[in-house]
Image (tube, rainbow, N blue to C red; front, side, top):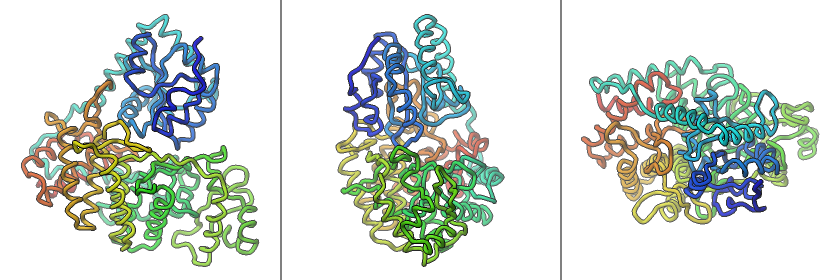
Length: 595
């Protein structure tokens, strides 16, 4: 059996998530030519593990399986093991999530993939316990099974991998583009139909879409906000419920990633920069038109949270805060009634507990409670001192790990959020923070030839930017230009948009690829559908039209890109508005201008 040193090669990586696995006994590689060449040379299959630093179940699998000497020994014997930070490599994550969906009809993180030496997957899943339990196959059993099968019946796994790879490539290929004739009018009708389809899934009891688990689904809410009064009321109602719920940090501001229940009460506690940026953008638009104070206060508190806890000394915005601290999920955020009484005193604690629904039994683990408001609306003024006391007391707890990786795309989203928030709240410090961030990106995440890099941590990363890095940053620059009227931001937006079209646009079929060069990937995917993030394609189209309206984009070229891309995806969007809300929003906006 092969072994590995106490510190593996992930210690040399920038990603905090990869570094967290540097002391595993697994002989980890980052995704690299070195790893793929070793697999081909030694004819070993790949174990590809994809996750991110704020992921609770990623930590669980790392502790249970990747830290286990016996499992590590098996992995080192049978496989070349590759660890991937999905935030650094959304291309790898997108491809293998598709494999997981095809095989299991589900996906998520940690993503666990068994593949041939060339990267073609033959089996995939998410979290696996070390031993078989809860109806889930044990990871140790799978490692032994696929390791031995590859040695003794390799042809069977290779055949399966070839078939699955062909299906993945087919999944990223559009076979039913729409006709160009009458496209302008159809764009608007398909967008309206998609919005009406989604409205049937709106939860008018709790807000949001569907049941548990419940995600903010900001791209769908943005599509609703562009709709009629009933759709817009659905957005306001959802924001009310979220802000009053446990998914919103009542003490410190900002939103957790999603709720485990349908009532937004018990969150999955990690805090992501992109969720908070997208929600600030949406809430700013809602507050601008409604002047609803509950929403306006949430904008302020969420921006203050980001500036206080997720901003670096040079204006850079950090990626995330972990769900866990002190070895437990949510430990930083939950309270027992006794803890509240200790900080506030019995009388003040009683009023506080009544308003924030804290009981001696608790609604979480070990008698602890996630704070939520019994009533929608502003928190009463007489409870604000109590919140300040708890915020101060919370600073004495072990804080969640902060991933200080700087991602260009997510920083672009936050630039938009700050620009929009400053416009509606009249806060100049928000503009100052956005401008400082742009300075950081231009100085640290832009190459000499005008291309973007994906990430920064202590130094610029080695990975080139993806289409979402360009699209989201261009949107942020345009939003900042509209607030400041500084020509620099419009010019930078135009230059990055030109690079996006040159490096990522498909002139034959339309649409934007996720990566500028496919390199060693089994497929070059296009980034067309929404997940928790809006699609880069939809945002790129909106940016293109905004630049054209500003007189900075050639009309003939822009119409060709707009029409070809919308024709490519319109039928898919009509069939699946969940995954194409951003594209539908762009289609409706563009349809008005093309008709």
